Amino acid sequence: MPMRVPDPRELAALPYAHRLEPFAGELERESAYEWVHVDGREFDDVDGGSAHFSESALSSVTLTRGRYRRALFDTVWFHNLRTVGSDLAETRWMDVECVSGLLAGTEIHGADIRRTVFHHCKFDSVNLRVAKLKEVAFVDCLLRDVDFGGATLTDVSFPGTALDGVDLTRATLSRVDLRGATALGITSGAEYLAGATISTPQLFDLAPALAQHVGLTVTDDDRR
Image 1 (cartoon, rainbow, N blue to C red):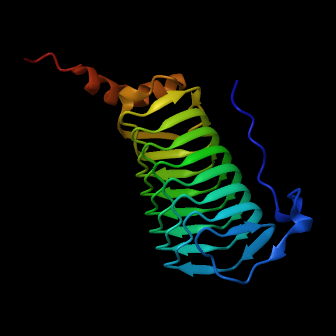
Image 2 (image 1 turned 180 degrees about the vertical axis):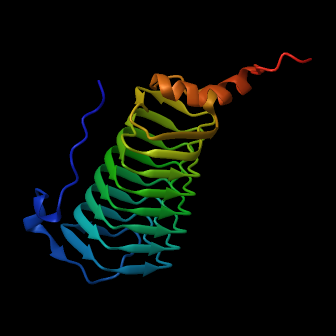
């Protein structure tokens, strides 16, 4: 059965919304941020490595060329998040909801992402190599030039999402549901789709890549 994905929530619907306090400070390394609402802020070239966000909300926030390696996002709500050229490698995401986000040229390799939903998000040239994704849903998203090389995907679904130029080389998939994806543009690593479920029409879309992998020539021309 496909994983049930909840609808995106508004800020006021968060169970910890009544605890949130406006945040007007700066993001710093190894700092803890609990019950904060960061709204309408731009952080350029900031080092927030190993920071810890819990039961917090970030809306209309832009992270440009930032360094947030090994940061923890635990029960965090993102709305209109923009990350451009930022380093979020080896970050941990738990019980995160990201709505209407843009992640461009972002390093998220080696991340641990669990129980997380991305709604209406655009991933453009995002590095998710050797990341671990478990119980993650990409809903009505666009994944363009996203690298899942060597990543582990478990209980991951893509309802309404288009994959364009996705690399699955050496990825490990388990209970990955691709049936709801609107496009399966897998440029590399189609042979690593074991553990995924696709529809019959999607199989026809993938046939050229799979045939190339096994060295099968497909032609209707009987000339030699």
